[in-house]
Image 1 (tube, one colour):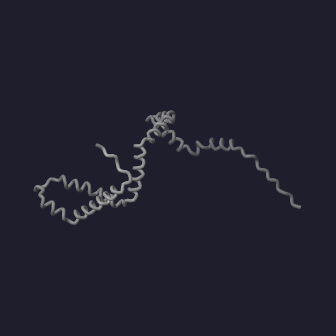
Image 2: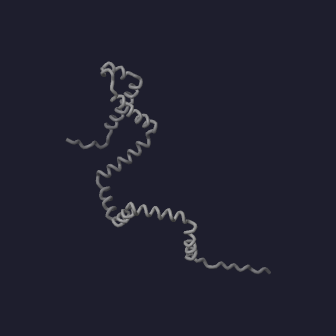
Image 3: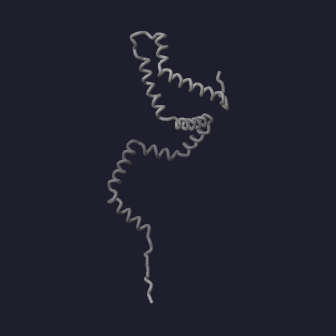
Length: 162
C-alpha cells in the first residue's frame, strides 16, 4: 500500500519577510529613494511642509470654517449655478465656442482700427445687409427670443433692487 507523502510547510513569518524586503529595498530602489529625498528637501526649502503641518494641525478649524461658509445662501446658490453651468457648457459643441471666441478679437480689431473715411450711416447699413451680418443678427435674435421665453416661464422671480 502507498504511503502518504508528508507535507510540512514551515510557518510563515510576515515580520521576517517584511524585514528582508526592507533590507533589500535601498539596493533595489536607490534611485527612487534619492529622488524622493530630493523632493522632500525642496518641499522643506520652499516651506510647503510647514504649511502642510499647519494645515493638519488646524484641520478641524479649517473644516468648520469651510462648512460654515458653505451653508450660507450665497454659497448654496453659487454651487447650484456652477452645477447648472457645467450642464449647459457640456451641451454646447466646442466648435460653436471656437467660432464665438475667434470672432471677438477680430471684431475688436476691426472696430478699433483707424479708418481713412469717417463711418457713415449708409456704410453701416450696407455692412448690416451683408450675409455674415445677417447671420449674426439672426443668431442674436434667436438667442433673445429664447431668453425672453425662459424669462417668462421662470418659476421664481428675482427680487427687485431699488
